[in-house]
Length: 440
Image (cartoon, rainbow, N blue to C red):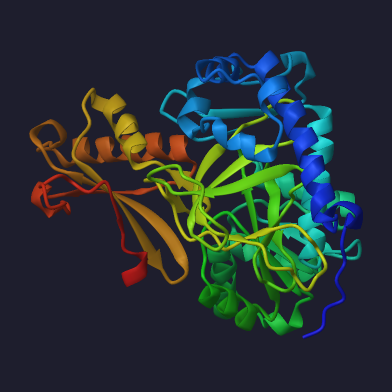
């Protein structure tokens, strides 16, 4: 199929590879000097290995000498210790879930926000968005980066933005119909939930103006893409972002749908062996590691995303010269993604422990009903967590549900179960997460 490819910033997105590498080196030098001077965390890290940016960085490959930055490092810096500028220069603050007491907080300067909008404009343009479109954003608006990140990039393109945010599916469909939405931005699973609800309501997708779905926020498959495209009569593309790095706009598919183009003039990507940390060659699946090149407020060096993918170096028919990353195939850690929310199972134990001073035996279970994912927390009944009075049990379950919902942003189901019914590993330990979506 022939596409009329539109490129938002041809000068940078189609840059000669040698010129791009030189630009990356210059920006990497500036970034490392910035964090060495302004961020005590990185200054300590660099000094511990005897690395002085001005002297020891002469080639991009020298980046591999530096240690990784982890999500725990960012949580431990709560709230502002890893900011590279004074708080008075911060004009936006976002955060994502971290430990019970320390979420991961990131900041943006005015320049950061301008760059963010431009990068989102790039990935939306690659996905087929134009100034003539009406774009409906069903990502959450708030401290997470998804909603506002897409919003400002779409406005920069000149598209009309409908900030409908999450949930209320029937209302989303009515808005889609009445406002003549042409672009839907959603998690892939929610796009299928919308398709299910349209079918139930008797709404014909072919009668809508919808032509593209821009997906992100969770892993998905080619089978899901085909189902979205077949049922909604659209073209569905993937995009990738990490709140700790920037948010949406890090990478995105063009209409070739052959991997997500990385904005390499702003990010250096590596894929490493999750166990050893050794860099893997293009085509090998491993953990994605990202270094920012232009972030002022919150630069990160060799940030381990936990996402599994591979790097694709073969040229793309769209004309962009940047490398691509494959579809995210899962996690290298114990993070669970449900409804676009990253959940660390052991953090749920911290929430439950705060209720009665001890953590009950628990197991997180991901369920899928139709195309909608749900989180169920099964609590093993013990003497500390069992009451003869049903009213007391209900009060405890309601408190658990509310506390967890406040922490992760989605409301779980809570089930009290027999202790021996919780699945265990070969050593008899309760498995903290069970994914039943693949068998439902």
